[in-house]
Image 1 (cartoon, rainbow over the protein chains, first blue to last red):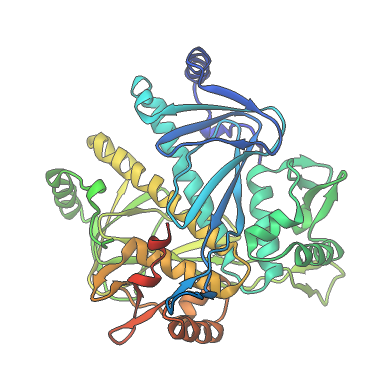
Image 2: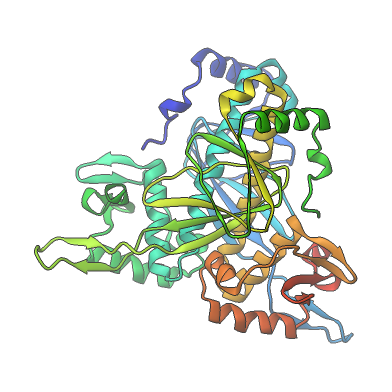
Length: 234
Length: 234
């Protein structure tokens, strides 16, 4: 329930610090402003030193056929549609692997997001750390299976609530009467994650608020009150 | 493009064989018939020796409020909705981690599916194999990010085509004019993965067939013809 390194994930401070020092020395470290695109290459490993990264996928795939004027062949219409795929918080690794026609991109989600990058081979020096990185991917994979579970739900409002619940469960920080998501997310970003639109998300968020299943925290953050918390149902 | 162990994944035959022998000796190995539920426990690691496993998630989450007769408190209605989360093919690992209100389950998807299970500690004997298992989870995680990209698409027919494309891309086997998915999937199962219903999937599969974007292979398998293959667009 915290955006910092979770306790079961705590790595020896000196190893983490040595990797950061090494990255500084080797110019493998850069700080980004909010919403800046993080340039990535396949095969490299990225670590979030501070801040948060937003992963975005785009599927250049469409079932709509474009009639070719000059020929009788029918080609699928290529229209990119971007989807929010989640956050990578401080202390977590990520990598960007493209598989046409799908592309992944990473953006700095908040100001002062610092990224360190290395080749997998660089980790030969720190085999124990390599295993921690792989374990982190294993846990990220488990979370994504839960995301897929909620995205399989038929009603958009259920997908929306499940999605917000998983985010708050993973990144939430405690507030007066529940947990809040410490990063802002636009309704368009939420819609892009759950197969819906900005307009629909705005309408359904209103419904969830009316029903007391979500609340506002400050100006533009979302919180889930204790009573409605899905953790309580388990 | 094969359901057997991919080449970049090929592990020294003798290690794999030694693990299978060890599992036999220790009664850590069992064969299941089609659609049988595979009993699992958190913390254990499962390997698919042969056949294929179907992962199913269920989100006991709903935004609909059930009015309590005896009290004025409003509780979210708990209604389980199962979602198909993908296959685990021969040579691949899986694990089942529950996070209330989400639960994961595994089923034998085809007859004669053989599963081996171990504790993570058992892998201390085979550290190189442990790293291969972790690398396999890392690749599974990358695939799931692509799934999430397509499930973020707004139109159900686009999600359907993206979903089928990813499955065929990962598990497909070559046929006369494209690649086919060697496992049957019901329209209800497909619907449960893409947030839709059996009825809608049946209708949209008809459309995709008409447009030549998918084809039937044999009685109940799906193929994607070369011309429509998304790989060609990349």
